[in-house]
Image 1 (cartoon, helix red, strand yellow):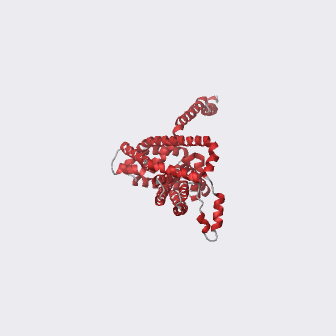
Image 2 (cartoon, one colour; image 1 turned 90 degrees about the vertical axis):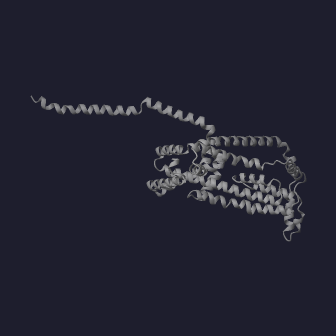
Image 3 (cartoon, one colour; image 1 turned 45 degrees about the horizontal axis):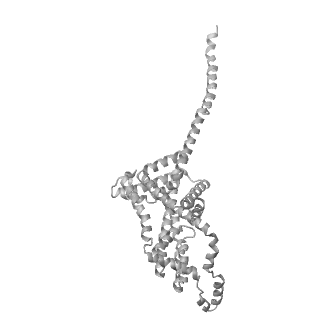
Length: 397
C-alpha cells in the first residue's frame, strides 16, 4: 500500500546514471579521430603555405622594413595631396626605385680615360710595389727604427701576385659567386619593391590583422611588444642610414681633396659598406696606399689620419646614438644584436638581431620586475592612438 509514496525517490538513481554516462562521451568527443584529422590537416596547410612562401620570405621582410621606415611619407601623400591608397603606393615605390637606382647610375664611371687611368695606376702599384719611404729615417729619434720596420714588412706586390697565381681559379670562382650574389640581391630588392606596393596600399588592414592574430596568441600584452618591435626597427634603420650618409659624404670629400679618381663612386661604396663590421676602411685604406704608391706622401698621410680619426670614428658616435634613440634598451644589446644578427641571418640580421634581443630582453625584464601588463598595454595603446592621429587620423584606418 505504501508503493506510490516510494516512487519519487526511485527517480534519482536514473538521473545519476545518465549523467555518469554522458561525461565520458563528452571527453571522448574531444579526442575523436575527426578532430585529430582536422588538426593534422591544418598543420599540413600551414607547412605547405610556408614552403610556398619560403623563396619570398626575405623579400617580404625587406618590403615590410622598407614600408615601415618610409610610412610617414606615404601618410603625407594621403593627407596633404589627398591621393588614393593605390596612387600613393605607386608614387612611393617609383620614388624608392629612383632613390636606390639613380645614384648607382650617376656615380658609375662613364669616362673611358678615367677608367684606364685607374687601371694603369693599380697595375703600376702592383709592378713597383710600395715606395721605400726613405724620408722616414730622417725623423729624429724614432725615424731609423720606423724605417727599419717598414723595410722589414715591406711587401713586393708583384711577388704577391706570383704567390697567388696557383689559386687564381679559386679566386675567380669566389668572384663569380660574389657577382651572382649581387645579382640575386638586386633581384630580391626588385621583388621587395613590388611587394612594398601592396604593403603600402593595404597597410592599415594588414596591421589590424596582425594585431588581431597577436592578441589571440599572446593576449593584450602583444600590443606593447608590437610597439617595441617598431621602435627598435626604426632605430636600426635611422642608425644605419645616418651612418652611411655621413661616412659616404666624408669619404667622398676626403678622396676629392686628396685627388683620388672617382671620389663620388668610392664615397657611395664607403656608405654602402659602412653597415658592415669592417665598414669604410675598406675604401680609405686602399686609397691611402694608392696615394703613397703614387708618391703623394703628404696626401697619403692626410688620408690615413683623416680616415682613422674622422671617417671611422664617426661610426662610433652616430650609429650608437641613433640606434639607442629607437627604444629604451641598453646600447650594448642593440649593437650585439646587429653584429650577431649579421652572422646568423646575413644582412637581414641587422634588423632581426636587435628586434629579437629586444623582445626577449623586455619579456625577461617584465617577468623579473613584475610589470603590470594592463598598465603597460593601456599606455602603449594610448601612444599608438596618438601617433595614428598625428600621422593621418581616421582617414588611414
